[in-house]
Image 1 (tube, rainbow, N blue to C red):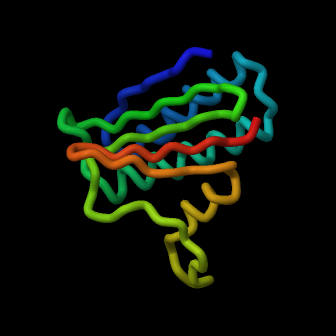
Image 2 (cartoon, helix red, strand yellow):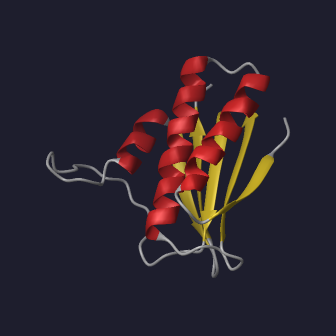
Length: 129
């Protein structure tokens, strides 16, 4: 299947835009509603983290990509590589405001990992289809 690569502004409104685009793509390929919902939630978490914790890419953007293969639904988000590395959260405090996004990603994906280069960082996740 084809890879969709989307360039979005490094702002909160980009999260909903990316989510809508992914939903339309998954509907076109007749992905189940549950898998589609999970993929949209994972994309939202990764996009939100990129916008909240990392600088934009050199032209002021963040990139999202997705595709489907035998492994599942692949979702990637690329940002300008912030100071902190995305990490698995093992025990978010019940009263903490944040810190649950990557725990959600952990639960909904079969795997996720981070690729870091000099000028950008990509978080790649696979959601079972």
